[in-house]
Length: 443
Ligand code: SF4
Picture (spheres, rainbow, N blue to C red):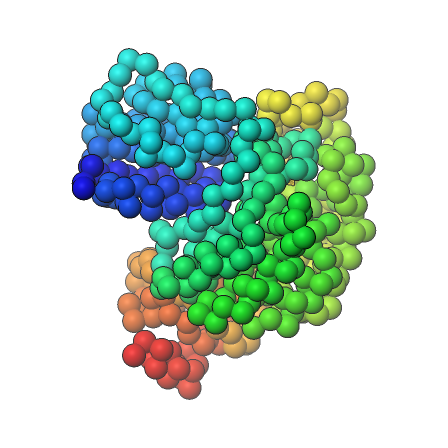
């Protein structure tokens, strides 16, 4: 039965993308037809983020956009912002339904009557009541798919609202997760990114672990490669690092949040490691995988970050063999303990420090790319055509650029890296002998 058309919009992280796809598959199974956002759907589902700066403004804009394509559309808002500030969303003109963390996968049950009404309906429970884990994977991109293996977090870092928006740490069993991955293996995707809020915590309340999980996933031959999205340094054990170093499927790329190089601030943030543990993880990775890409999250302008503490972070990052930074400028969040802390850093200082770290990130990235010049690597090519060029990523996360060739879309090519171009991506040439392998695959 066809109930009408539905379009989706996702704000925020990889996990949100995986979850929007899961909601989409559920609605398709129930008879709703997915159409592009700008084609005037009967229903719009907007999956929001609370980490995003100005979440309310972004949400408001998307709602307005949806209504411009169909003024009678039924607007549903889900996601972290919907869990944290449901009333704020209900006040946005045109929103019909707000679903919190417990209800977001039950959208279909709330779509009985699609008439727009005066009152916005809100279904939102206390976050501690959210215990169900709904697995899933993203399917919007043919090349790369985000497999949701875990949700929620038990850590309560002082600056973070995610545990309030997503609840306690939880996951499916290894057996169920592997079955989901096998389902995903039937799609054309070339790369599976393991995604969650705190994925290293997988299996914390059972006798399973993230290490056990990756060993089982590694056995699925139909999946060409896995990438681990982001993992806390205290949970990234030597055993995991050693396993990735020898695996044929797990690529040499880690993303490890550091947040600060100052032990005083790490303690105040309630992070569960100090700078020496962090350094030891990087050293271990590089000793086993000198080619490994390492991305780092860092926060600047956290309360109490004096010039001296900031320089500890800067100097540590400068000396470490890392490949790029994700720099977050600290911003005050309701209901976090950091909000009550002394030593607020003026906004202009936060901005200046952020700029310094972004420049450092560029320097690190360039040095990492330069180390890769003249090397031969495999690349998964993506679909988009950017003015006659296409991009792809090596296993160790070097972004390459090549003239657009539709035959290479979503294919793995063997390339030699020539040099960094003016856009900061790597120019390449295809290795002829290996191209035959690519054409055999296509046949
Ligand atoms: S580990 Fe800390 S920063 Fe990460 S989600 Fe949990 S509370 Fe937030």
